[in-house]
Image 1: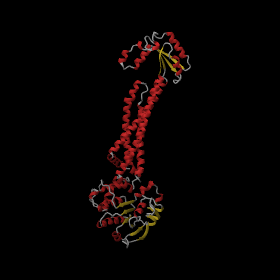
Image 2: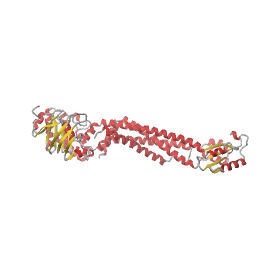
Image 3: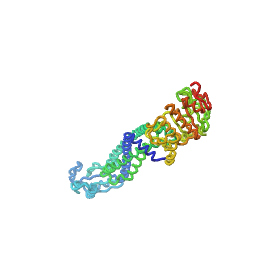
Length: 302
Length: 229
């Protein structure tokens, strides 16, 4: 096998079909990038779910002085007795694992930690602005219903926030995005397959003299078909490299950007990105090879 | 070398067979003319030898191989032992004489050093010395056919098939082409030439196999084209 012969043939083929080749590269690049984004969203959802699984709590916020919540109007804030009663009610429920009291100072500290970069916000909020709350940890995060029922509207409670519900809305959105990316990716993969088929067909037609003579003098099928398949592979590889670049850009600017607001500890790791890139790369090249072979079988009789 | 035993070939969508129970033997080193009117089955015969077509019935042996039992994978190896020349030359217009001949060796993976050695020899054998760097469109029809013969012969095939090689060439030039074919035949290569050219057949006095409507109507050693023509 003479590599330079094959490569010169491949180069000629790619140059002759330049516009088709570009179309293939662009389609493969976008298709693979969307497939990769879908996979990345998927792993993001999983790692975020893991991260939050043992952290989701039901927060029972308590009234503070001059609290704007209507339930708290005129109460002058929760008193120690109400707070103790609430705590023991909740602790007595079978679904509850533990209850912790977060006082205003702790709340302020957490708030400062989470918004360390936002000096304007930090300077505006004082310790007195932070409400006290009861942090209820459930044995089963799904069984939040009775707990919320029990404390909502109880004296001294300003508001109940179920983190689980908030997260679920967000995860639902992410899952929709993932499916959208995957569906568009599948459509583009289909388009790419047809484009590659057409490119190979054009290429086979352009070079029918050469292939005819190769057949006649007894060149092996591999030798005759390899230049065409290589054309597909190279277009696929270039598309894959572009897709990889798009994926890296989307990790840095999209995923990491969203991360800052959500769960700082479940960042999409570079290992995940690398494995997603290799999966899309292999998949893209594989599609190109298959499409080339199928077309060649039809248009390059041996 | 070529052995046809009761071979019948019917093309799809045609009632009349292109070859009808043909049996013929061509020995090693023979020179055989295949004559007959258009559509008599000459080209089908050549295509069957190359296994470009499969017979509907009968057995074909080429160079000791039973073609029916030759897997698709092995067909290229069969074709490496058979050279082919056509009426329309089939040269690559963007390659010069040397490159056209070398192409046949490159694509079967021969080493470069071997190619550099044998191509000039063959170019000289067909009488094109000094023209190795001409492009096909700078050559006459006769010269182009010599290039095609050089390409067919460069891998030293056991068999050379020629399908009306003088069909596009004037009679005077044809004599030169026949001399090259004769020279190739003298190296021990079996030559089968399909032709319409009565003058050439008559002048060469070689074996003549005449086909008509897919049947062999005459097989004569040292024959002529035929009284009817």
